[in-house]
Structures are given as C-alpha cells and as structure tokens.
Amino acid sequence: MKLLRVSMLLLLTTLAGVSLPVLAQGGFSEYTLGSGDVIGIHVFGESDLSFDEVQLSDAGTLSYPFLGELKLKGLTVGELQHKITKGLLGDYLIDPRVSITIVKYRQFFINGEVEKPGGFPFQPGLTVRKAVSLAEGFTERAAKKNIFIISDNTADQTPVRVELNTPVKPGDIITVEQSFF
Image 1 (cartoon, rainbow, N blue to C red):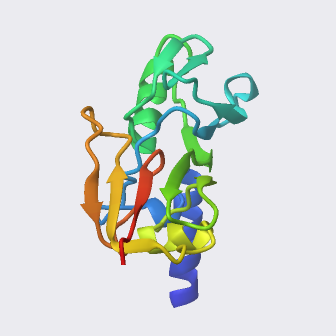
Image 2 (image 1 turned 30 degrees about the vertical axis):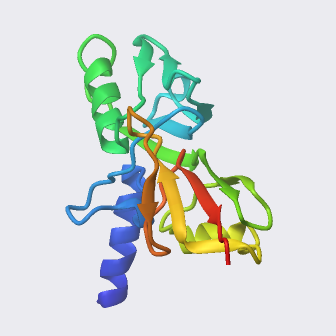
C-alpha cells in the first residue's frame, strides 16, 4: 500500500510537470524561471501547442502560439502553467490541460579561489559546499569564511557573505576570497 502511495505521488508530480527536488513545503515549486532555462510545455492532445525543449530568451520571454510573447522571468512553474492554461481557455480550447517541466536549469557561476572557476549547471539542492566541489575544491589560498554570493534575483547586485551550507540558486555568482595567512 505504501509503495502504491509513493508511486501515485511520483506520477502526480510528473503529470504536474514539477520534479520533487524543487517542491516547497506547500507542494508547489518555488523555483523561478529566468533567462537560459530550458522548459518543456505539453498540452494534452495538442501537439501543435506542445514543445519538448524551448529556451527562454535573454529577456526571460517566450513566443507561444496564439498567446504571443510571454514574459516568464520570475514566474514559478505553477504560475506559468496557470498563465498558459488561462490564455488557451475559451477562445482556443475548452479544457486545456497544460504540463510544464524544467528540462535544463540555467547555470550558476563560481570564481575566486577554487580550482576550476566558471559556470556550472544548477542542480536542485545545491549549496555553496557542493558548488565548490563541482569547481574541484578550494585552492590552498582560499578564505573559507570569506565567501560571497551575488544573487541573480536582487536588483542592486550586492554581494552577501554566506556559509558553506547556504543554498545556491541558478544565476548566482559565488566568489571565494583569498586568505592572507
């Protein structure tokens, strides 16, 4: 019986277009879409309105049939699903069933005193510690207590001091400062 419940949960989250790692406590994704994300849009029974992979533009927009240019930057998967469903309802379809999936997350960036600075694909559950591991670890001169993040979501782009267990979001820029000792 427990296996059946777990299977049903996985099936429902798959049908809803949301992967389990990005679910919030309320059961809805908190992940906000941004430039560079690749998403899949599926409208049940409507192949002309479904796309396996489409990348958001540098402005965070997407051109969608019948609805035109949609601004998606800052929307969650659930909000986008609702927006497309609402847009197709009535004039185009009687009962649109829309499913959105994130095919590929945009990158985060890490620079400073790490062995391999650069951009890396975001993964749900990513922390600064895991990001440093992806960048092949700290250099000998790394100041492990002087790590800063500039979040893609902040308007002022001010670096914020963080700990190794701080969550990382797509588009974030992590800087590991140099130690003087």
